[in-house]
Amino acid sequence: MLKLAGVAVLFAICGAWSSQLVHGGERELISLPVPFALLCALLFWRSIRAIPIVPAIAIVWLAAYSSAMDVAINMGVIYGVLGDSVPMVAGGLVGGFGLSLCAGIFYGRLRWREVCETSLAGMISALAFVPLLAASHSRLNGAEDSGQPWRAGYAFAIWQAVVGTYLYTMANRSGRLPKG
Image (cartoon, rainbow, N blue to C red; front, side, top):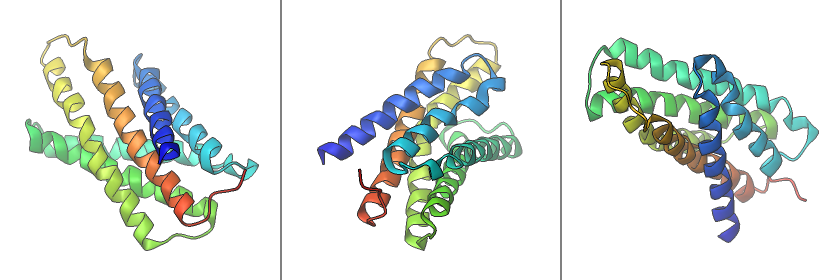
């Protein structure tokens, strides 16, 4: 249990730190998933074969981000908890599903239950992004918000801790975690 708590803390720190990589603007979005991907490779894919997983995870992040943005745009200007939750849940679902596919590519097989559980973990933990989106609405209306980088840090810390720890647990319980 202590080892699992340590894994969760590592992923949370990684999420909080990596969220600050995009503080300068959207052109740095591609760099955000790299620390998470490298941490995954180090913790439970400990092999040279894990190197292709890093760009695959970056692609999953871009797909999840794009999904959340597309849903938000297609919903129009619907503010409030429900309006802010739907895009985040959509992005979390795509992220969790995509990461389960990345794990399946590395391990050579997927279990439907693991795909569903990772997708669910991604969806639920993505609710941590709701305050970030809600605050961005006020910024669009002209209000300056110095707390936005903190909200991003918390949201990414929560999401990466939940999903990263679940992936680690999935690999460990199935006996697919490399020894060493």
